[in-house]
Length: 216
Image 1: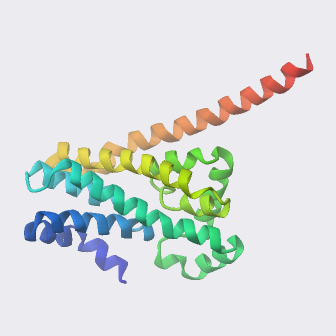
Image 2: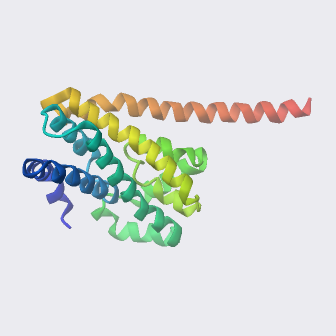
Image 3: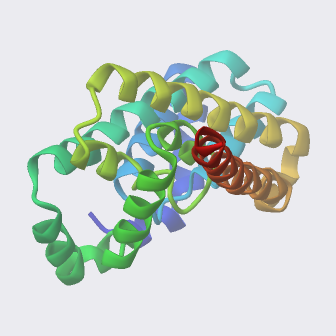
């Protein structure tokens, strides 16, 4: 699959699907979000706001657009989760070193996501879905660490629901300016990163207090 072709023609492909039939439009959004999770260069920041734009135009409905994006996202998370469970991390990094450029993923990206997962634990499966750059790869360390499938499904779905809803609402509110969604969503992502940083500081302070408190 030529990812550059998909990205450059994504809006046209979804637009044609919406014009053909409303339900084909929802299906195209579902498939696009599925592919976005498999191939990170495909931007969810374009797919869901575009769906919101068509809601703004009255061609699609809000709830089905969000649900389609959610289902596509969750389904797309499972292949990476399965890879994490089945493939040795060292072999996966070597594979990414050779072929990761075609997916827009570097071995360093996987290593960074693993560090984040070790710091924040399973909660990162939820919060990571709200942060561009790690939202796709977070499924891999969850698989490597053998996170149970039910909690993984729950937290992935919860984080993905918020993400797809925010992006769709952004497209709905911005209308024809939906392509500027990154300017609107960046402060939110920065806020989430700040919360994660604060949680580390608070967690470390609590452990120090608990440790020295017992010695008194």
